[in-house]
Amino acid sequence: MSSETKQPLPRQASATILPEDEVQAAQFRERLRKLIASGRHVTMAISPRVEAKVLLEFNTGNRSLNEAVIKRYAADMKNGRWLNSGEPIIFSREGILNDGQHRLFASIEAGVAFTSDVRFGIERAAFPMTNSHNKRRPSDVLDILGEQNTRNLAATLNWVNRYERGLPGSLSIGISNSDIGAHLASHPRIRKSCEIGSRLNGATRLLSPSVAAAAHYIFARLDESEADAFFEFLVDGVGATSRHDPKVVLRNKLLGNRSETAKLKDVYLLAVTIKAWNAFRNKREVEKLYWVVGNGTTSQQEVFPEAI
Image (cartoon, rainbow, N blue to C red):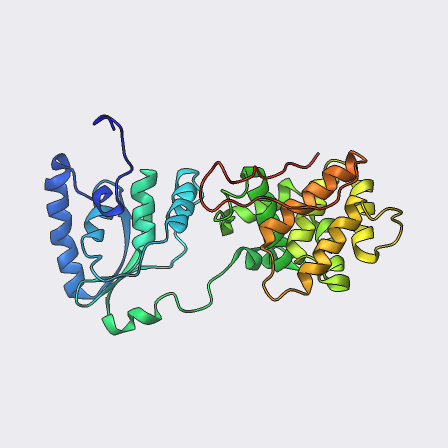
């Protein structure tokens, strides 16, 4: 490998103070020591070059980092969606960072300053309780906006977002609280699909409500009446004339999966549902439906199907 090839910096390495920032960093360290001793609660402007990095020097006993959380926070910061919610960065009275590492690393990744309350003087013994309370989720935001069936609605929006970004690589991506309202505004007709997905799940348990709703929504954007007919058959199984009809093959596969102890994963079920839809649209009969899942090598992994 060429010595000029750039490799992603490990998180801790990215928090290293640059030589030209060392004087300012030393001044901030002194201020921080006084704040730790005082046990005060302050609101602080945190830059990615100095304050975030110095605060992380005290990150000596925290949980493992969640990269997906860092990237989500960094995206919000870059796009101007990060606000001071009043949830503080927390320091123990011993001078150890109890909470806030994901926000600080996100600031460094985004290269964006942010403002946060910072609380000093908390018992280190309280660390296991940090973030153990029920945190607000995207479904809670939708509930505040007056939506119905918000857990299914949020989960369905997540599946559609992952499909649009490219499955299966996007499986770990979730829509943030700050983005969920905008995603719903971009997909207003998804509410009907959620009703249909819940109906299919309630009547048959063939698919989870959110996977069924996402599939219906993806199909309805192409042809709503055909999507409705496709899902109506999955509900009641009435109207097919051939055992090789893709709707029949799909329904039988889903019925078989329902009775299995080890269930197929939702992403697999979405893939074969899309394959059945594509065959249905092309008026093509099929004998079986499957999606090849590799064991980690790109050559063995079948490309995720795109609805037509």
